[in-house]
Image (cartoon, rainbow, N blue to C red):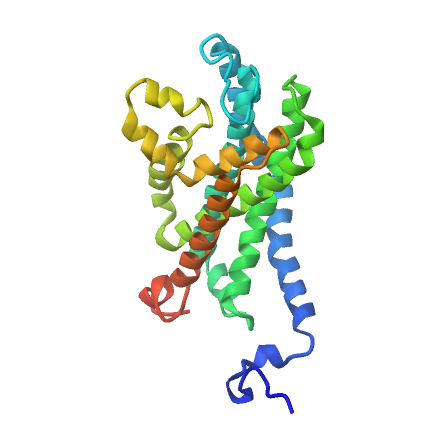
Length: 286
């Protein structure tokens, strides 16, 4: 006679409910659907999310074409235009800023009391935070997809056979940066502090990365410490993962770092929202 894997006396009540899967699906649809519908009802958010990378693509790629006109670095085997080189970095920019926007949304919901109501739902806290993570990632992928289409319409060369793999890496990068935003929402206590978060998180992550220039240029200029910071920057590996995918290749190192950072960021967010420790305990519980 087989023994149960868990002692029934210690089995949480929600695992005994036969309709748990359907309940989780409804909860996911509610959380993700709320964020997506709120985004679609604010078309200005899409415009503001795309105007920044479009300016870089149109203006900076033209202005710096003769400065960074070509790049023969892995995974490229021949000369590429600066706009082609920039594309993965600008896709990462979209996901990075949306991840921080998701963090801002979490802080706003917490101040308005919505987050407290969500965390008192009769579901494991990890599932609820995972659904918030999926919502942020879904918005990032939506914006990245629209930007990819616009970049193609503006004349950026794409290897169309590599687009399915590129879309997959876009999703992985979006999940990692959404997890980063989720983790930061634990420690950003007030909306007024969000501007500081942007200055000390978003811009260093973006500029100390190969999003706009190859890392060997940092070495060439003698900025070895910036080069070392870029190597440990998670955003660097998200960009490189998409860059390899854009030409139909895979970077095991970059993919592994992105997956590992996603797990670390999400675990830290779970710890921060744990009622026995982290932010909720410090605020006196929900």
